[in-house]
Amino acid sequence: MLKRIVQLAFMIIAVSLGVQAFAAGDYRGDERCPRPTDWSNYSEPYDPLEHPRDYPTFDKADRPGWSCSYQREDGVVVQYGDSRTPQQQWLDMYGGGSGDQQ
Image 1 (cartoon, one colour):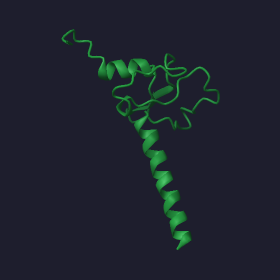
Image 2: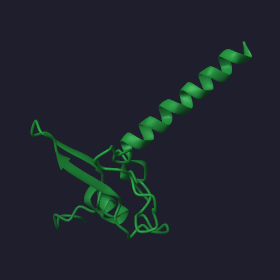
Image 3: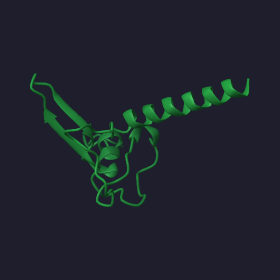
């Protein structure tokens, strides 16, 4: 019984980590787009949907996120990450910018 509970817990953790990576712009990379080894120049993965009322002010929120893209031989463009800063992502989603805000 305990073994099944532990297995279930690991499965839940694995699925939630996968969902987080996808929601945050898919930071996994691949052989043509390896993730950076030094994240000091990049913001952490950020998903503005998780923070609808909280403009990002955390450390490195004004730094661009890691991103990489390339076009495969079949013409499909592969994109990982989001090069916008978390602040830009939030403003693009919630900031309006159309001039009709009240």
